[in-house]
Length: 435
Image 1: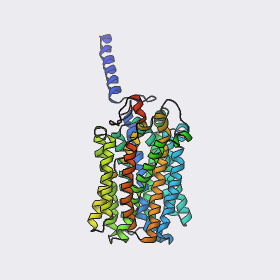
Image 2: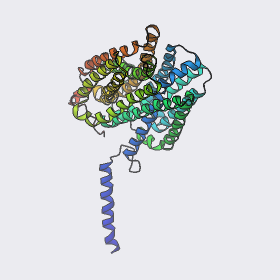
Image 3: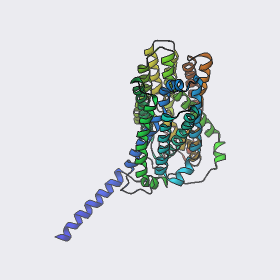
Image 4: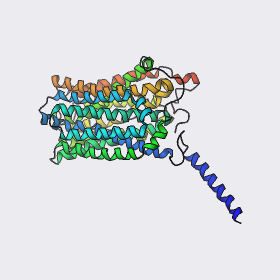
């Protein structure tokens, strides 16, 4: 009887193990103790941490400006310092991930961003505040490029959109948190302290789960012929994608960073409603990414982005129009929905559009170009506003939206690298073996 009982148990264990492998197929280097859904959960957490501090400055800026007695255009220094840090670490993300593993990279980078938030809170002089912005960019660039590189090669458009929806959740909570702090009469430093505390806790989580990420990141780089950095950055399709990312992210961040100031100082909107409007903008991007993640692979990424970019241009035009405040709020929401799938879907298309060898470099380049755009475009609009008035900012955003649409149309007319392997561009789905 004892022997007879062993076989059903062995059969049951074998069936359970087979089912688990089918339900949660593991990547090379992962076993059943490290299922893929655990790495997905950590990825979602990382994107929340990435978005949380990025948009706080848009609400805090009027208070920071008054505290240091600065002109309006000085915001460009904060954006430029942050973008410089982003640019540096995003271009080095491949080497950093290979050397440290994603887990350690996430832990160290999140800790650096947390330190930058504490620095913002306690900076007694303006140059130190700008230096903290550079540290923020260094940490965020490493998180952004590393996670996007992993997700673009291993996950579908659905998960990529949902990951970036988590970024929007953090980006929505940041302005709301800072608005609550300011409207309660507390200094802006209190808001930065709260954000820094959350990020410090997340850094500890990433450090504790570092071994899991280490096993996954060991195979994150795609196999195949290698392409040099110089060759990759000179490729016309890489340059065109970098231009799209530069202008798209510049538009997204210009609407975020300047909406509060435009509404309160040019449209006569109160600080509370204006802060809610910025949160609504990021919330609409987040909800849009959740919804579009469900349909992106079925509709086709290129087709989806064509119509969404048109919607973004319409929303930006509503925000720019000299109409009542509720129209501006609606314009921000429409623009947010239209912009929602652009970043994640373009990232998902990169390996198929450029091929694995080029995309290994291009993803980092795109993140770097995006962050330079996120600093340069809002900064340039701020300088223009300093000369001709805040009304120039929403008008400039509407023009940028149209330009992004035109560049993306040019990008869709280029043949995919994957077409040489008889993969059609119309599906624009995940690479083989992705989720």
